[in-house]
Image (tube, rainbow, N blue to C red; front, side, top):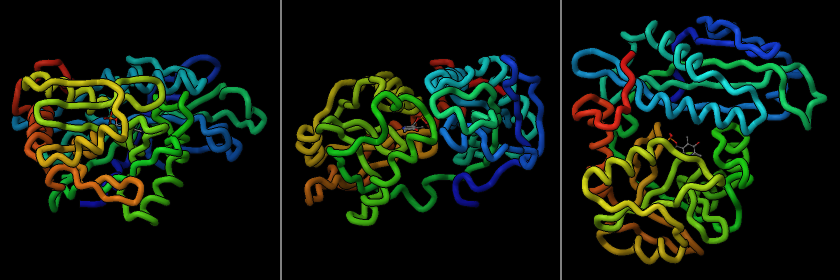
Length: 331
Ligand SMILES: *Cc1c(COP(=O)(O)O)cnc(C)c1O
């Protein structure tokens, strides 16, 4: 299968926001996109997106995982960027109508159809550096994806970064391109200088998240992760995993976690750590890099609790265990 995110279905759903209204959604070829070179998004980064997945069940039916939560987050990102807030029903209809055209293309588990709603400011103006776009385009892309873990889930090496932040603190809950651009120099430096896979941002020693995924520490029967605030992205996988952990009788601690506590706990042989996100589900963390030291997390390998939580999530997504929390939307 092609590398994650490089294969696209040939059409997309789109709706324009003009004169205070959303146009009736249409499904058009990908190359329909026309953008004025002075479009607001290209200069002032009026852009946000979502990432969610549709799964094929044993009986052939297709189900979208946590659609309303992703739509609500897209509305929030748009609002915080001063962009028009997409109507929830409109966006839901766009996603479902598009997906219905490609039901036969939704891969079998462990593959899935990755859904990428995107919202960009299209007003042709380079004069609005300090003003929001008055026009925008909402579109939805589909990309079939394979097994992220094909060839085994190699535990990640994370560089703990206590000086720099991933993005401006007031932008953290926006799922938008600007924040990725802001994180990239730190990630590139960590890869170059420390052979790290990712950066775990811990501004002022407060463990937060990585460049594109939330961080969970698993110490025996307890899952510890940073309590939500507006400085980092509120992952829907994070929320799902915490819910399933509680269902399995684990204790869930959403609170502040200092770098010192993380390092002290991580070194214990039974400890596990993982990153959560839609693309990677739950990926084990094997090594933490801090102040020139390499700290192995537990055994340094994929641990049993990470495996168990990932399987529990996959089982709901794949229709193999009951959808107790109403997370699936049938297409
Ligand atoms: C998308 C994203 C996540 C994970 O969110 P999910 O809803 O679990 O996919 C975490 N951190 C950042 C910065 C993200 O952009």
